Image 1: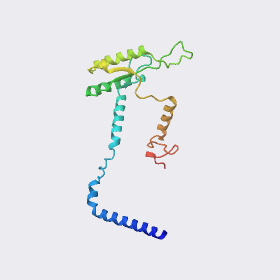
Image 2: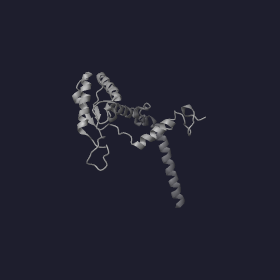
Image 3: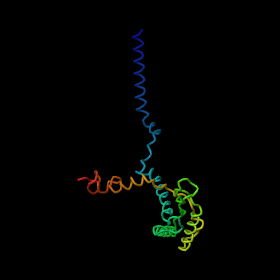
Image 4: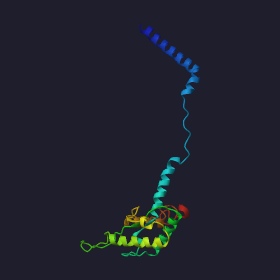
Amino acid sequence: MKSTSTIAKVASMALCAVVIVASGCRGGKSARWFYQSPPPHMMLGTQSDEIWMKQEVNAEASDFVLYQHEFEIGGARLNMGGEDHLKQIAGRLLEGHDFPVIVERSMTTERENTEYHYPVHPNPELDMQRREVIVRLLTAMSVPEVELRVVVSPALAPGFKATEAEGDYINGLSGQGSGNGFGSFGGFGGFGGFGF
């Protein structure tokens, strides 16, 4: 019995194989009807280009921020760096850029009713005075719709903490951050990051 059932199983498997091979040879043309070729390959960078463009636009908006350090300490008047920056902003606005001009909110005021009198408090009155100065200066430079464009707000990108700034400054001097400076290998490396 066992040998007959084994022979029957082998015979049925062989018959199935013959049928599959025969139908595959005949039905090759009909199988092409169901085959879909894969889509063409996307160009290199196609998916990431949109991300880079968004980052570029966001970074460009940061160019229109007048930071606290561009004003005289505790005052509404721009220092020399602030004046130069405001002229660049006015030129770009006149070229057609459509970003808001942000006056960074001041956080350098002392309060007498605090325990340690640290200059870390906001001063909304000073912020509004600075805004008015910027509005007047941009109006004098013929920038349209200035009153609607200038706002007081925190900066778009957070600043460095003291420890972060110190570390970046030291890395920049030693060339460890970019590999382009002197001292790439522990103090006295060569140009372009190659130690000699």
